[in-house]
Structures are given as C-alpha cells and as structure tokens.
Image 1 (spheres, rainbow, N blue to C red):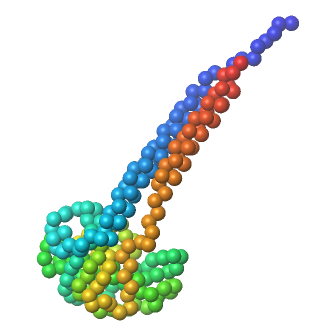
Image 2: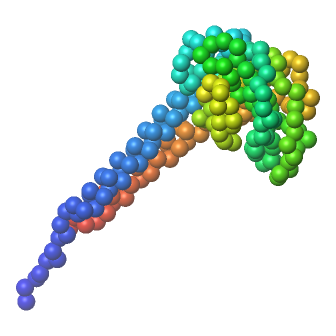
Length: 228
C-alpha cells in the first residue's frame, strides 16, 4: 500500500485581497481621526484664546475676512439697528439632557458688506423642559458682544430664518451673544458649549488597533493553511 500525502492548500488570493482592502479601510479611518484630532486641538486652542481676546468691531471683521469659516469663534461687538418684522421663532436644543429654547433676533448692520446679522441671544430659562412653548417677544438687541459662528455649523433651521428678510443681505454667520447692553430680561446668554469633547485619539487608536489585529488573524490563518 502506498502512502498518499495530503494535498497542501493553495495560496488564498481571495482572502489576501479582502484582507488588504479591509486593512486599507481601517488605516484610512485611523488617519482620518488623526486629522480630526489636529483640527479639534486647533478649535480648542482658539476657544481658549478667545476667553481673553478683546472684541473687534463687527463691520471691520466682516470687511477684512470674506470666508465664514475664517471667522469662527472671533469675538466682535456691534450696535444693532432695528429690523421690522415679527419676533423670530425660538430655537430648540438639548442641554444636560433637558429641552431648552434659545432666543434669536435680527440685528441691522449699518455698514460693511452685509446689512444684517442673526443674533443668538441665549437661553430662555423659564421654558426649560417645555416641548411646545408659546412664542415670546423680547426687547430688540442694542449693543451686543459675542462670538461668531458660521450659520452652516448650527442646527435649528437658522438659514431658513434668513428667508424672512428678502430685502436684506444677511451675513452667513450667527453672533452668539455673550453680553448685551442693556441686558434683556428673561434671557440667559450661553454662547459657548460648556465642554467640547476630544476623543479622536481614542478613535484613531481603535481603528489602528483593529488593523493590526486583522493582520495577526490573517497571518494565523495563512500559517494554518500552508504549514505541513
């Protein structure tokens, strides 16, 4: 009787291709999180510097810088003119797990490339927790100091609010009020988030760790297939 040696399995080309594709995807996700980490660190550094930065005139800032993203977190001051129309709707939000409502108002800008900017005046504390609060009217803003945020970065249909003013040329930014003079009754300014998380390093390490784990699994499977 002759001995018949078992046939060795061939090189797993399909498995190798699938592993290479998955490895590239995982490394790409890890690299993307590293990019996000650097971006978030820049944002946090800018916010930290903002805490002591003096306010610049809004008209000057809007005139010198054209791109809204270049103006994010810039502290400015403006003297608001009146804008005719009905009070703007409150903006829904969630803060510390509770429903909150933010007041907003138009501000006429008397010079510069835009003649209006939307003011986020802050929270209306008496409406906290209400699902469908009644519309409330507040005195119009006069002198406002706050920080700029591109309107595209905010929710609450802010861009649609600007459609109420077809005869105006509004800035593509929202001025998040820090202080108003005179201070409006019933509104509590809340311009910046209390805490901005930065867990992108954890996410990057997770993706890179999965990529390395995938290589170990592939190597183990390959060794089992080709060993004598």
